[in-house]
Image 1 (cartoon, rainbow, N blue to C red):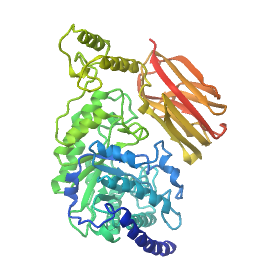
Image 2 (image 1 turned 90 degrees about the vertical axis):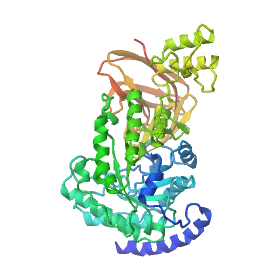
Image 3 (image 1 turned 180 degrees about the horizontal axis):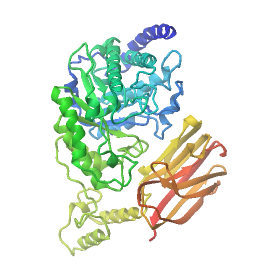
Image 4 (image 1 turned 90 degrees about the horizontal axis):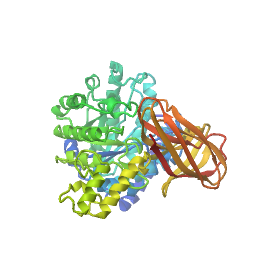
Length: 580
């Protein structure tokens, strides 16, 4: 360690011990010495289903080691985490939350000292989880990865190991007295210098083993409850294939049976990823290859395993997503492997963190059923005649039932699930069909992006029938501050009509695009908007001639050097409908 860091850190330890004494009274449930009787396997056994608080505390700006302040938490489009968000997750039956954290942009470049305000903010979020009695995993996240400084490489290894050690010394000290529901995870998806994801070289595998050992040793030497805390170690790139696991060595530990191995399995990759919108089906063999390897390599050798990240995006293939999710969790449970869904607040989201709504109730219910060893039957709400689709035929059948022209009807007709079938259900069914005509009817598909690395600043809000966005700094380019509606399918040789109402508190000139939600984000239709303080209505038609794209978005660019900040816009009544 650098001398100036050591001097500061000794002083910090003394202060932290004093603060900890006070905090013990404020958070007795969290910061009391627990008996720590549960070993790693017992902890994994207690986990039912896990969830990732993704793209929040792990969001980052740029690659320089610096102190970027607390604004990074919301820079990738998610709101600041609250106790209410965590309560919502807990109330579903999920009992473990992984809290990814990126540290390098909250540190001093010379001393490696973590910003005290950032440590306190991380502590707040950890407290939210533990106050709800759930397991909490705290890690080092985007310090690794394709843009990370921590590499599975000999290049700059000593300097990187020094900084890695400094992070875990400080984090361990901060949470030394926390109970056994708090788990530490050494690092996220670590890559070598060439960002290899599939077949890492021997050097990369060796460095991963060394960094895992440094992590375990650092935590164990930090005092408090950390000498017996259960820890999580990742494979290279958090991979689950044999090319990665073949070189993995479980670290030596001063206490037996307190280590968990973590991997991330997004398989079949082309099916789960947003970058391949045309791949909408899957096969069991692609899932089995990775899960079976983790079982043979670790679980069979009495080493507990968790899938720290998994998930798949919507591609207008709800039935395939549901069957994949259900099978995936069920297969892992058969092997004693527990799963944590990756929720980034966007394509992979299960929860709307602004409205506190469940966005994917069908997927969530299927996962929880599988995690609890129960059978799950999909809810085909609205499919009154049981033909597998919801359409005008279901409206006709429900009308016939209400007029007593038919005497029996499916439970799928109970649209409001009040155990009665009446005129209210008919109204809800008609509204559902109307909403299906508008490709932008789901408010949960709204999101925002603010590139603070390009000096943009903004806030995003839900309002009645739409959204608003307050831009306080436009950044360098028009796309540095944007809001967008995603998860749209555009069909080849189809004509669409787009319409919306828009208003600003000052005059502005910006653009919007109907575009790819993947790859190069190429536009399919673009236009400019002249914002005024009077509400205006936009309406236009366009014909989409490219191949069917199941991952499109409508993006409103609100940044750039040309905007007059601060300003606030409102977009309401967004509609995109097929007209042929």
